[in-house]
Image (cartoon, rainbow, N blue to C red):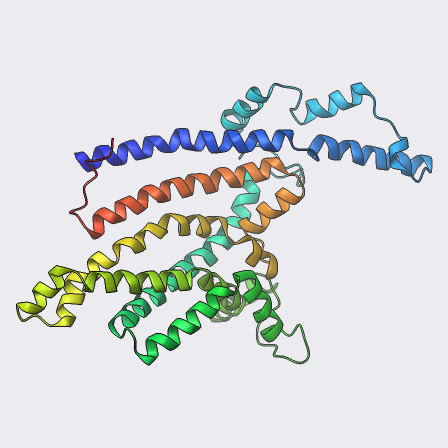
Amino acid sequence: MERLSYFIRRLLLVIPTFLGITFLVFALTQFVPGGPVEQRIAQMRGMGSGESGHGNGSSVSITEDQRKAIEREFGFDKPFVIRYTNWLFRDAMGMNAYSYKYNNKTVWQLITERFPVSLTFGITGFVLTYLICIPLGIVKALRNGSSFDVLSSVVVLVLYAIPAFAFGMILKTLFSGTSDQFYDWFPIGGFRSENWNDLSWWEQVKDQTHHMFLPVLCYVIGNFAVLTILMKNSLLDQIAQDYVRTVLAKGGTMRRAVWLHALRNAIIPIVTGIGGILSIMFAGSVLIERVFAINGIGLLTLDAIVGRDYMVFMGTLALTAIVGLVGRVLSDFCYVLVDPRISFGGES
């Protein structure tokens, strides 16, 4: 009951935290310059100057009635609190609102179009990261100080020093045929080939793998070093504990002490990253999607910010916030699964 009440409180705290995040960001988007009203006015001035033959669009004036009509069209004629309430309830966190840029599509339609792309890359990168980093960290801990440990640490830290998007640009230059001096092994960008629906099942698998290889490699590199070093240091810390020495003193082998006792405790810090990685899985990586021209949620969010498409931006923010907040609760739940001895009795 103690743990159940703790998780119930954590889930209930998601609501005010979500409201606080969205309210603050919604306020910023409503009051920063360059919004949809200013863009529509600039567009009208540009059209007016073109028709009248003037070179300077500022010579075309916009009346106060025209400005009020534009504000009413975008809902800016209402007080801020009412606009936020309408966004939250009437528009279902903006999902039913129409995009400023894509006038014939709702935010939910845009997200559902891009969501499978980001989810595919995110899940693949997440699984590969943990499948590689946890075993590598364990091996490095068991062979601490060896030549393998030193060499792998150098490689890991060098890769960590390279930003994921920069690493993607390097891979794209070397292996996507962007230069005649290098190789043309992978496509320049995109999620699938244009004729993907015409391919056989096996050809679709190969085509999908062909397009995903370089971007997924960049996803993995982003968390590779941190998880590997964390796994190694956590296991080394557990090996140095008294209970491991007790197992060895009773005649147990180091392998038994590590795999049956130390490893379970060493994995506990690893699960703390699940919540953050879930956000990346659903929201995508903005810069990686930009480099490889992948139409995922990350690129959609970036385009919404650049184009001041606030409805789309708020919709993706709401989705990311919910996933991130629930992911934090999931991290605590994983704590309990890994080590049932953990108690949340101190929480209130």
